[in-house]
Image (cartoon, rainbow, N blue to C red; front, top):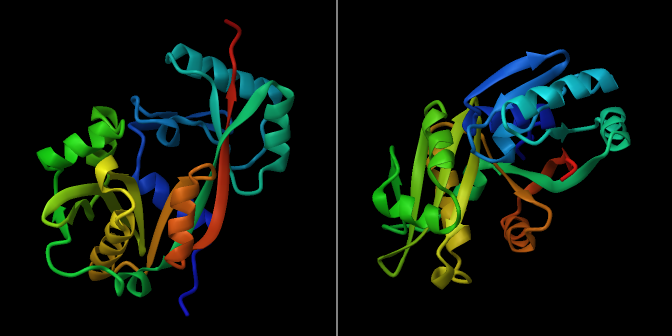
Length: 245
């Protein structure tokens, strides 16, 4: 049985395969320039889990100066830092689950034939499908920043485009991002086909682990990954400061 990675290794893979435009330190806190690519690449983090109120406020001021709402990502067991943010008026938003499984084990369930097409750069039809799901140029730029090896997956159903996903590899961990299925193609197993096809591609590149993240509230996705036999290996959440209007 494949030993699954710890939370630190999964977070490192997440950062490498879905990277911000830039990072910089602000005391013990790391600030991220997400360039409009969403919370995952924009949230500040504190690796030590120890920051004073003054250090939190300095980071918040830097985020405001960059035109962003103060936002922090709480990774792993950071109870003290979590309590600090709560005491300063930061509210929890978007709890996230991190899944992992043996890449070769999941790859064996991938459909054959032309059920999935892999592209080094996003095809026009892939960009269209992503755009319909709210994944626009800023998130496509995140994909472009990710270091190779990576692939853009087009899932097909009855010879028609059905869904898309992006996968990158860091070390021996592959991570799936930006899975989107066309509304008319849902409940046809497209999410499973895209995920298992991505695992097959990753295993062929030498990846030992296949992983992904999804929000707790995405019940359909969580049910899918449970059916695929993926294990919950880590969790995290964000805290955002609601500024006075």
